[in-house]
Length: 235
Image (cartoon, rainbow, N blue to C red):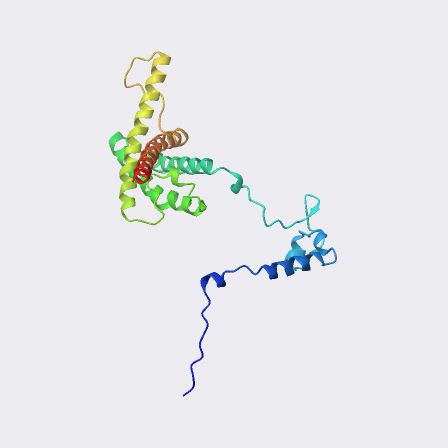
């Protein structure tokens, strides 16, 4: 009967040991490369990709260069600005198609309908768009009322209810603005309407009210986290 060959197990410590001698050999090889490491690296896009360059390909009078670290225009725009612009544009779009398009005269019905539609739009379009644009830092969580990284069924209904409340806040903004204009212009009629619904101002009021509610939520969440952190430290 053949004897079983004893297999020497490699410990975790030995497995992850840094091979210092190999690093020294690599450094020595780089030093003895005849100065090739000091040569300028070409960033010509055709030399980097190995594709034959067509004749007379110019950009602003210079040969097109390949820069792997170049960021696009949208990458240089701050996340807060992109988030507010997206919210403002979608709110104005809802006003354009549903407030102007349907022409509902009853204010309560209009408030409920527009709030429900805006909640659906946010749940189906705005929040997924934020998830698409975000990085590992989750920088768009501060601009969502329900910043969950997964698609939950219940957020569909909570967004509808939430944006109906946002519409109530928007209606108070319009009422306050009209009352202020009436005071300035000297109108005493309480039912005098100075400013009507239109996409630009409607989107601005929606973003304003929405961010006030989200700011309150973020503040409460931050306080809860601080309290839990203090409790863990005390324990």
